[in-house]
Length: 121
Picture 1 (tube, rainbow, N blue to C red):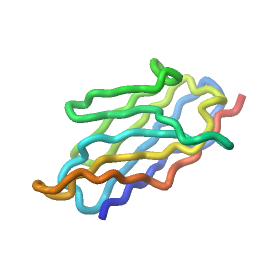
Picture 2 (picture 1 turned 30 degrees about the vertical axis):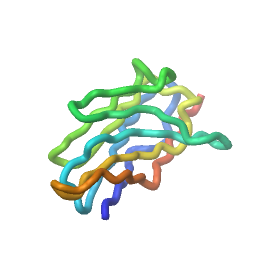
Picture 3 (picture 1 turned 60 degrees about the vertical axis):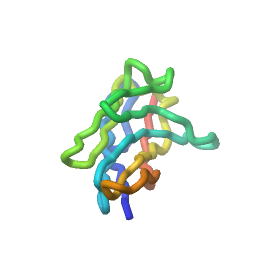
């Protein structure tokens, strides 16, 4: 079993920055990919950023140039650096990771419980 725990959320003024962390624990051989999604009040969960094998990255158009996803494989942790935050970035941010638990095993997808980000105007 694998657990993902997000941290780093909070209240920040527009234009400010936050750094989210997603720490994975449990039976981990490798983290093949990871990503961040967010859910604003009354809206569906949406894609924010993704990091894959070889550290290839992808971002939603709304966050390009402002957010940066990165990973520390030694710590089994994924980060989301968020700069120039806007009120429309407000929501619960969820971490998702595709984890291989053994050398010969497949990749299973896991989700964290989320961390609240609130950007005031």
